[in-house]
Image 1 (cartoon, protein in one colour):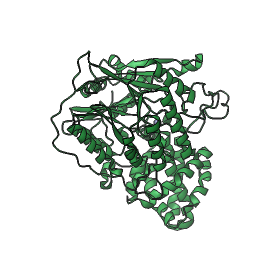
Image 2 (cartoon, rainbow, N blue to C red):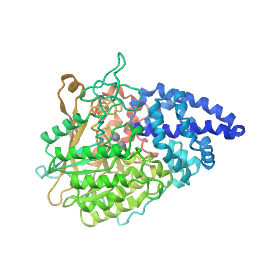
Image 3 (cartoon, rainbow, N blue to C red):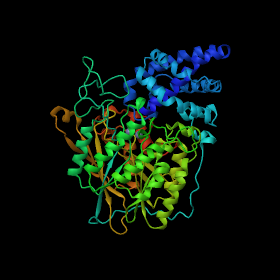
Image 4 (cartoon, protein in one colour):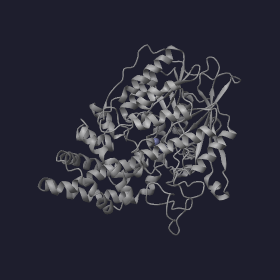
Length: 601
Ligand SMILES: [Zn+2]
Ligand SMILES: [Zn+2]
């Protein structure tokens, strides 16, 4: 979230800087226009700052934009500015005057009251990539704004719509059935979004003005200091807390294998180097290997693993590449965490791989950074980079042909990716609904899930995805992890999730008594009164939520959504409705997702 805001603000700041510089060049034609924009611009930034604490509670950019709309028509302002200014930025690029952008950064940051080192650090980190993207993209200015700022529906732009070929001969659907009660079970630990901050300092300023706090300076009088074991504000996890939680899981849980869905580095995205990311990845993977000896650990790559955050250049980008990261991940995942060596080639190619977890259970780890709209390199070309979806479909077909079940792990839930990806992914999941028996994601830091419905019959649920709670406290969360009970492993196991349990660290009590207090937060079948955890059960569950949107069950869902940091009273009707809409679709730009959700009480 912070990463997204910083990079979007950065794009905005670069554009704003350009206007000031452009005055010198285009005084007559642009001057009058620019003055008007700058005033509006200031107003918007003031609103951003005033409502910062409300943004901090928002889960995603949609929530942020919703809050804008409640107060000023900022979305329109953003988009209008983008549409007007991008051509000017192109003029500066053509005139070879982009070096002036960085020089005026501090001036602009001062003017808008932004934290100077964050602002200048972000511009320094992202400037080259953003300018390259604007230079290389074939998208029109309008489409580019649409992509960067969500100004219009992405599906309205033909250049953003692409489809992958999906094999025909779909077998008749065979919805999962519960196994016999005494059949063997597997226990799988999912870790998500560890985000350890190696510079975490107990007692430091916990509610600072920077995007990531708990790192320096004493707190102002009357303001909170960073707790020894962590702080549920804009702070990541101290190393010793991550270590304590992982040790607790290792000692108390039965674990057959582990899925880790990525995001290891902290959120100081404005001043991170490749060396910083590599240090985080190596240190945390070593910690995982020593804490869980003899356990297989399967990882996916998160958006925070890149430097700068989010930016994964595709092979068509000649000015940058990400081989430094894939080389390190291949070495760490194979040599430290035990992945088979035959995964190396595709990890080196694109940070994705497939391997057999058990006979009959194939894992596919996708690199969804190639579909995330925060990866600005995709503005150059977003069509299935590296043909990853084509590769994915080939392996699903292989699994179907060989009677294997498939688990998917990836960092971004499909709902949070480009619409074209989400719609293609939905088609793929539809085609292979008999083969895919589990999907596991992270990234939102919240405890959520996403439904997949039949392409033709929207009433028929075909699959569902778990979005697991983060280890990090960032932001307004307790730390946590998830244990799944699955059907397996024996011949013809379905490998579907049968139940899950979430464990949280009670951070308030842990800091108060200065001893780590971990507790079972909830067991899903008991807490939600679910007969099974198959798609049809989750669909029925959503119907119960829709039927009583302001009731106690939805309050419980929201409590667990925040890992019991908040309670249901903090999510009003609009917030509840937005959450249910999110649960109901794995696609961005889904016009039907909210159809059945009652709009107002
Ligand atoms: Zn994260
Ligand atoms: Zn992430």
